[in-house]
Length: 388
Image 1 (spheres, rainbow, N blue to C red):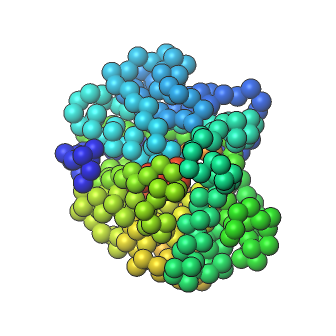
Image 2: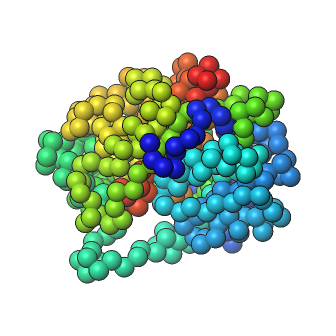
């Protein structure tokens, strides 16, 4: 296990509230903090708690340098503990383990983890400006899509992964999205649609790329003891792990192996579980290559077999393995840093609240976050009361 997850007791904390902010395209002049506050209040209502109960604040946002301070000022909070760790879209799985530590050690009793983004109404480039890198920027690679396209191209060359297999990830995500009333995309999608869409960065077209939405979300976490008396069934944190492997894509040791190969085993060891125990997966799908890489690195199929693994609707509704049941960042929403939205969907699946997309007898959920250009990987395993 990583130093950050050592000493965390399996099932000692639980997620008791989860909610999205408004998603899609919000009204002009809305701020990221508006959406963070909106999601937080909705999540507290979901948990049956009040704002005055919160004494731990965990927040991250690409548009805010001091996200926890901003939301505390907005909501009038003076928490005992706060954290604004920002490591890209995986930050929220990392913040969940930080909240786990704070709650278990008594630094706070009710923690909120929140996020908001207005990247659509203000443009993605303005919301998350690219940093200059002396080794990459002179070549004018379109980032981050170019970095992920390099990983996809390498996987295709090394393992024989086909363009159709990569497109299958987008098609499966869209089939799940059509079961989700809150999903942005509402039209069916085929493999040919994906391949024939506007080219972006070889081998990707626009349909291989995540959405650009406004939105946000929040979850509420508390001790297992307190969770038992609240409004909704607790969803227990069973294990977590994280890994930072590089910052820039030119420093990635192997374009086909991500830090999920480290964070996944950490999380499974902490939880006392194995991949076969998992009922539903939430994998950060900023681009179609991501789930293929993560399925391999997390142990759901051998390295190099991810493309073949997803063929034939295997990860779509009715397939052998439920992956990204909300529709994912490819078809549901992607408000910049997407990890918190994955956690929200996994909570709903374990609670049995996912409606037409509900996975039958869902007891254990995996939520995997990705940050930067495959730079940071964080894995969390969540479970129902039957698992603790």
